[in-house]
Length: 257
Image (cartoon, rainbow, N blue to C red; front, side, top):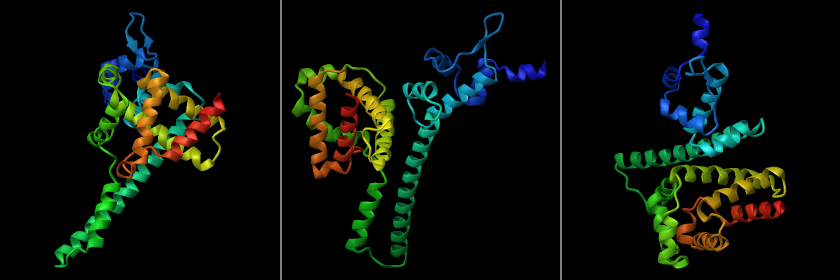
């Protein structure tokens, strides 16, 4: 009996072990990510299989994936989880290498100053360049880039209408980051007609439509904004997207037609 009680957890115990709220468990259930068992009295309970699924959901959520993407992974091909985790590892490794390099440069600069030396123009240029490269553009920086472009492409009435469209910006930003990293990995293989590239194009299009809602006029204006931003040398280096990635995804999208 003790083993049975240990194997089947109440929502309170499952949430305690996973470090999430009971409300989060109900959200995961409502989104079809996990289906708890029911006691004879109708109470929710989580057996080993259900707890394992909860563990996967929570682990992916903590990696920054939105629930919609988590659902695709869990309900998709058997190797999808491994592919996304590999992608996430690559993102984190790259960020760690950037941070390690920047930290080394800052420490070298501090050592020079503490030794009574001054920093040369070349030292200061390197310091500024390498430390700036470690950080992604902040939401404020992205807003500063795209607000003028939005005013160029959309009327005041159109901008007001677009602001009314509701979605979780943090989830959207994270999903774009993952899609762009996946596009880079597929570009290295060089085949935009591959099933993986075409699946990426499908999910890319779905992500775009969260904002444009499939309106071809809005699609064209958003694409114009991004092309302008990528063509501007003052803003291009701050963007997560570049013309090469965009061209690859567009080729993959054409292959789906």
